Structures are given as C-alpha cells and as structure tokens.
Length: 92
Image 1: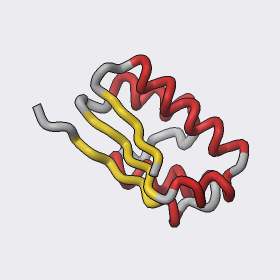
Image 2 (image 1 turned 60 degrees about the vertical axis):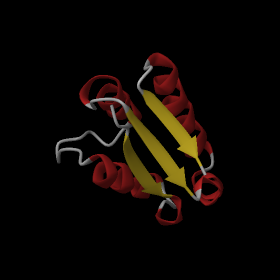
Image 3 (image 1 turned 120 degrees about the horizontal axis):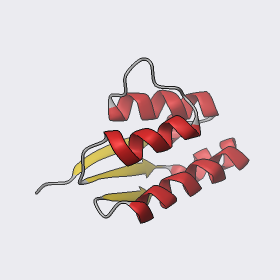
C-alpha cells in the first residue's frame, strides 16, 4: 500500500494562522475545520485515511517564528504518530 505524503511549506508558516492555512490546504480539510489543535488531533486520529505522512519542510524557520506554538504543534504531531502505526511526521 502506498503512503500518501502531505507537505507543509515551512517558509510560508510564520504565524499560527499560516500553519492552519498550510495544513488545511495540504490535507484538503473542509471549510468547517476548527483551526485549533483539538480539531487537528481529531482529524489526524480519525478522519485521515492511512498510511500517510506529513513532511514539514523548512521547519526550523517555522520554529523560530512560532516559538511556543511550534512546540505545541510538533508535540501533537508526534503524539498522533505514536498512536497511529500508519502515520509518520518528518521535520526537515
């Protein structure tokens, strides 16, 4: 079974709003997506069909811009990866 790859452009992520714009576009999320971490966790754990991976390109630039929000997002993505055998997150 092939792995679906979703790519986040870290250069475009300079704010939390930018992150949500990127994740909505990359995952083709519906307009009613809640744009918060709880909603993202719900979607990643139940709605996205696996196997899949999220590749966050240029993540170091996003980390500098987002500060604590980056840590929260990264922690969530890593937690979901531990919960799902068919999901992987890669920070480049």
